Structure formats: C-alpha cells, structure tokens
Length: 355
Image (cartoon, rainbow, N blue to C red; front, side, top):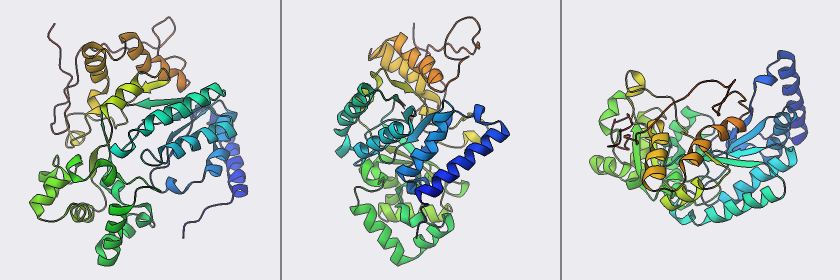
C-alpha cells in the first residue's frame, strides 16, 4: 500500500519546511520547486500536495519546474495538472523537455501548445524547455511499471526473479497505454531503444539496441530487459526514440521555449568517458546553431542565442547571466561548429564547418 498524506498534513509540512528554510537563511538561495512525476516515488505525489509545496516557492519569488506526469497518452492531462498547480499556487511554471512521446501521441502536441497559449491569455506565466533530438534518455528501469518498484531496487529485483511476478510485469508492459509512462510501447519496441551504459561485465552490449541484444541472447525483448536489470542490479541506461522531427522544429519556434541538454556533465576521459551518453550531452548547442540555424534556417541566430542564454537565465532569476552588457558575468562561449556526437559512437567534439 502506498501512503499518501492528507492535504492538511501536507500544508503543515509545507509550513514547517518554510520555517526551516527561513531559520537557516537558505530560502534566498533556492530557485524554486522541481518535481519529476514520471518517476517513482514522485509518481505518487498528488496535485494537492504539489500545490501546497509550490506556495512556498511562490512566496519567495521562485518557480515550479516539472518533468510532468505524462508525455505520451496522458500528455494533455499532465499539462493541465501543471497549469492547475501554477494557477492555484500563483507560481510561474516550466515544463522540463516538453514533448509528445510515442508516434501514436505526436498529434497531441498541438493541443498541448494550445492549452499553454490559452493559459498565457489567462495571465499564467508558463514556459518550457527542449533539446533538439527525437530521442530521450533514462534508465532501463523506466520500462517497468511503478507498482513493481515499490519497496526499492531490491524489491524490484526480487519481483523480476519471481516467474509469476515477471509474467505480470510483462503483460502490463505489453498491454498498458495510460496511467504510467510505458517507454517500451512509446518507443515502438526494442529496435528503437539503445543501451547507453552497462557495467564492465556487460560492456560488450553497450551501444546495441534491445532488439539486437535479444537476437544475440536468443530470447524475447522484454526477457532481455528483465535479465539485464537483474544482472545490473537494477541499473543500466537507455536511449529511447520517441519524438517527431517536425514536432521538434515546431517547439523550437515557440517564443516561450528555451533550450536545455537534460544531461549530466560528462567528459571524454576517465570514468565519465566510459558511457555512450545521449549526444545531447555534448551536441545540443552546436546542433541548434549548425543544423537548425545555419543549415535549415528554422529559427534565426538571434532567437537561438536568446533561447540559450537570456531566456533561461531570466527564468531562473540569474540576474548576472544571459546578456552581454556592463556588470554582467563574462562567461562567454563562441561556437561555430556542428554537433559531432552520435547515438552509437564516442565522438564528442563539435565539428568545425568548412568556411
């Protein structure tokens, strides 16, 4: 059973958090409240809880930023939830890496955009950010339904070792289309899911698709995923091809959308160089300037730079960043290349164009 606190208890908790922050003098250092509702345990947070907690961010000029509850079949309801939180808590809100995930859901993007634009007309302060790729990345365990993760990693592994529970998980992955983010279905199966990192003992499989690994191991795709998770103690990363290129360009043109990498800070050498990270880790900004500005002219150079600098800086209240003018921090990067990072390679450096 999942324990969900009453709204009264949440309000008391929110007040207690506020007192602690004020006492420690740390409230001024906070940017706001962030949630990642697609993943456990945040998956179990109610809208009412999030409203109460967001009121703290609002009281101090902060922002509510969310990896919304659903980006696939539940996209519209999830956008509506974010708008409700923004309205009820009177707090600005941002959607992390805004997308319509899964081919069957690509058409929902226009309706989601319309909801946000209507919210703008009603006076709500709503923004979003995106990365310029049609694939996302998260753990291999993201393909497992939330109930199977209750109790933590070891409980999940025990369920995957139990033939009856394993079969129950498999049936839900194959049949469920709403209520949780079914990454396996949204990607269209194992051909569109790459394994981005594994431990040394399985490193030979890194960079291959789930479908390819299943063929090598002579088993079906879901059994392959389950076996990898058990062998990797619940870890392992995946790259999921979920989005439409047309939708990427459509989002890029929206004036209230900024750019992000949605990645860790990698480096080519050492421990951080042993993974096959999503190319967005290195290639996001060179790709925007090279592919979408210079080559395809989707947006202007001026608008691209604004979406990389002053728009996100202002959104986060970073008053000394994002503009070139007297008194601002001089953290300037000049980029004239195009992304060299690929989904199946360890090429990281931007490629200089032929001038």
